[in-house]
Figure 1 (tube, rainbow, N blue to C red):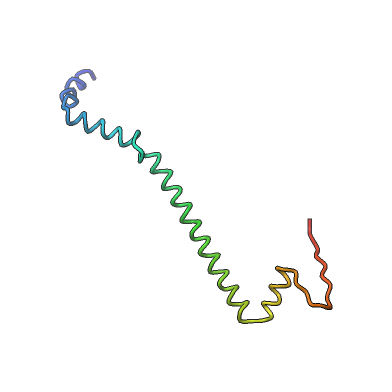
Figure 2 (cartoon, rainbow, N blue to C red):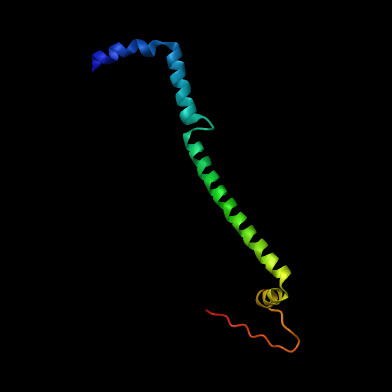
Length: 99
């Protein structure tokens, strides 16, 4: 084992190789964009892409609901009664809350 280290020692005496190894260690662990930071950035990117897809789906669903509301007056009346508790003049509304 000691014999192998003696053979490899001239390799580590080279100033260019030592500089490259120091640079590689610095970039890998101490730089602002080290491995851990890159991993966290990728995780945030995946989460943001999932959020973007969720909101795009919600927008598509809301557009479909809006189209239904603007084309059919019965749907508009149903929406107003359910969502905003609107009523006609001769009606009473009873709201039942389930616990």
